Image 1 (tube, rainbow, N blue to C red):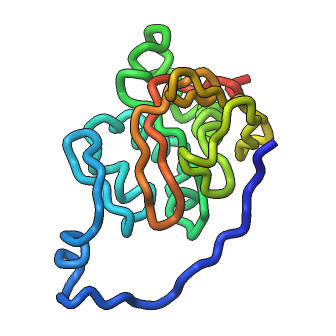
Image 2 (image 1 turned 180 degrees about the vertical axis):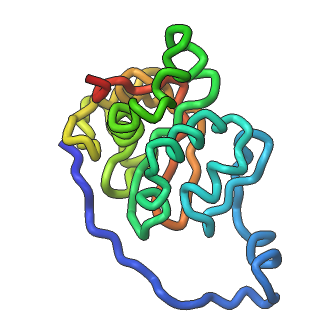
Length: 177
């Protein structure tokens, strides 16, 4: 079973020969998700808010008041469902979950998408059971070179300053009850 590994943290600055954050980001290797570049120097939330494909997830994180968890030093692995994944849920599900009276249920669902530790795509192996922040284990499956976690296909991977984000095509509802 996969559990979090300790990661070294760096607290300092790195000189890139230029000045300012804009110059530093120009030198980073980015992945485009939702029409926007995702920067390894930005944290999970900073990247997610720029993705047009993750507006529902961002709204859910905000409604559950979990932003502080996703900006912490980590490391964290987040499986980020796309807007399309949320749209595939039964009609009215998202609207119901975003109601204030369902905040605790929503928080459990959002948390079920996070694993303590940094689990890159290369680290996720067929047959593994990944420990999630909710205390559940979810299966990892690799078929024809494609990795699935809890049945959701990983569509893209984004490095972040406090972990890694795997964009997925399904919402995990394992902790909804």
